[in-house]
Length: 160
Length: 360
Image (tube, rainbow over all chains, first blue to last red; front, side, top):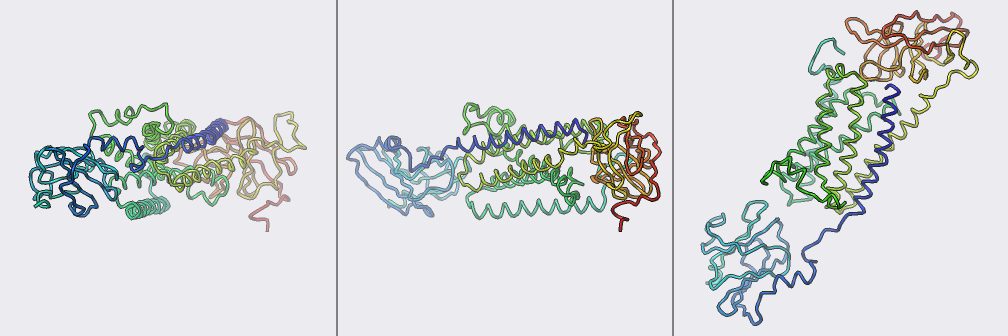
């Protein structure tokens, strides 16, 4: 290589030797530990279940409602209103999970048309969802990121 | 070398080189995807492919950056240098695969253009841990694209070797951008010390080898003429070395007028030419004389030692230098002749035995 290029090459390599470790160290020291859902601040955790009225009574309870998943399901009654309480005994291995309710049964693998979105489901704390006055026939967990149903529960069949 | 345009000038060495590269890349991808699928059973196929392509490209870039200094430190790495450009194009294709899959996976479903989304989706330039690392990867990919697109000898011949080499030094900018891309991206979400250790190890290897090679090379630019005869002769010739410092069919490299000159000894003759090969500016003085021609150690380009011209039908030419011998000392005139100028070789007196191959 000619002398002028050798000098430029040396300058670039020297700049790299300084810049790359600096960026690496800065990135490493600025790393933020990922937040795990079970470690959410208590205030946030309480806010999730805040709407459950005192004195709501359990009318149905099952740990076997969701085949293949360890989910604990309770239906509470408060006056005329039904409240669904769902707790994951182990984390769901899917991103962006949404909970749907449907008056249709679980005959089909796909999310039924007209299924009603109850809300987002994540973490291992009990989460509560308002069902209205009527208990739906089925519950569905749907991963928005993967675009697929990951679990379904035959609530009507279990209550019979 | 070739006198006319050819897409790839295939030969057995290139075929062997590319076969090893292809097998290595496929093996790496298969091993990475297989291991990752076992270690991370929840990872989707897209995620595995994105990680595999990105890791393979970055690992290959480390290898490419290490080849240059390794060849300066030990000549037996020269076969790796021979077809390094194919390695570079392979690396670009892997990086392009990583970039394309990432863009489709993370940016295709929005309401803006994918490229615009990569550049503008994350505005957190005020935060190190949340810094938009994807545009850094995109910028590196753009540099690697320019390098891959101009890697052919067609561009080397038309841009000229100095411009081409200056352009291809962009690889250092691309590497710095990719270190930032990985450190500010994957390392932010992967707490395992293994990832950080792997990146820092690769970085230290590249920087360390360049440092060692630079240290080895530095004296070459300050090679002083022989101390005893350092004074410039009245006719401008400078003493550069003794005859016994040059092995038969080899060269001694000296620095004259700010450039390196290769002084070759062959038979009972001595000739001096520029140390810079016309093709890729390879170090001719580290080559040897084969079939009567100076042969570049990088890609085998050849030049006649007395004229600096490539044998017919090739047209490459390098500058020559006037040379003479007094006693056992070789003198050079520091002013280079125009490329391809015939200079009568200096003759060695018959009682001066060559050192090296024929020295018993």
